[in-house]
Length: 74
Image 1: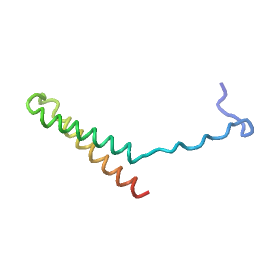
Image 2: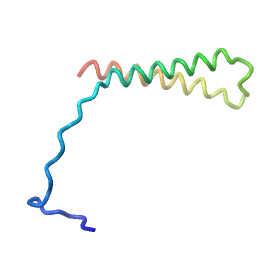
Image 3: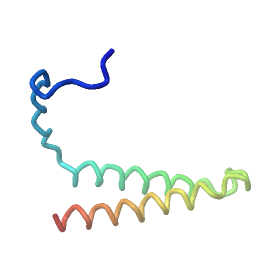
Image 4: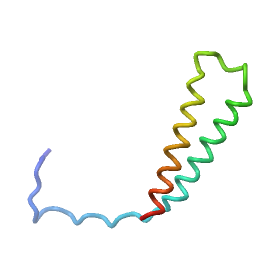
């Protein structure tokens, strides 16, 4: 296995893949929101040790909204 390839032997870089970042972020936001709703409606069925799950969902929503606005500015 060679760790260095001469420039003359390199293959060209592939073209960038076009993606819809807004759609991917929106799907993630919906999933984090659904997870939060499930945890809120579960109420006392969640053990006290897993109370941090709600904050994890809130963090996911917060970062998702930040990403959504960051992508819209581009």
